[in-house]
Length: 113
Length: 110
Image 1 (cartoon, each protein chain N blue to C red):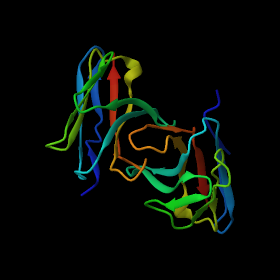
Image 2: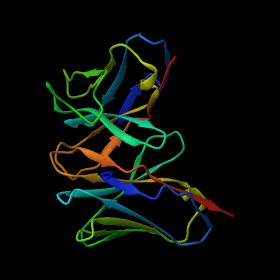
Image 3: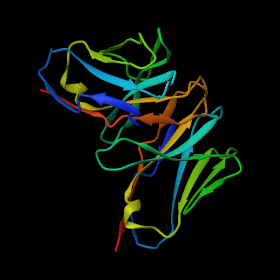
């Protein structure tokens, strides 16, 4: 009954470091996405994928890369961390068809010093 | 203009009260609508989908007005456990890309 699993839950990085946020789902969902949530801004879409091997940019993609080699996994890579990337990151998955709700992981709280 | 707009609140209401939230969206091509609930520092969780004819789930009623491009959520007989932020979410087409409002904070008090 795992649903969407994100790791790590907390991370502190120094400016310029790189890291990968992991996301895995066990619901066989084709659609997966990454959001960031900042105070007063709501959730903003970073990248999304409609299936293995297919990814696309969302609203705020700069500074992030994604890949989708399997249906289950959708990692988010920060190439060179900046303080502006301090945020809470949520991964979500859902049916690829429009009109279906998405299910969220419990988030990664990332601080960039 | 934001794609999805909500009054941020907070709405402070006594236990047992009825409270209503509205949300407006800018894209007239929007096809699907949802209300999510988010507790402090937790992930958003689906509260209910919103259907054209309106729908009810226990104490919660959602309405959609396509002509005026707004969505509403009515909570009856508020409970302390209803205290949370309520997110209005819209799918404007193009697969399953969702656009989130910034949320309306509800505080239910004794």
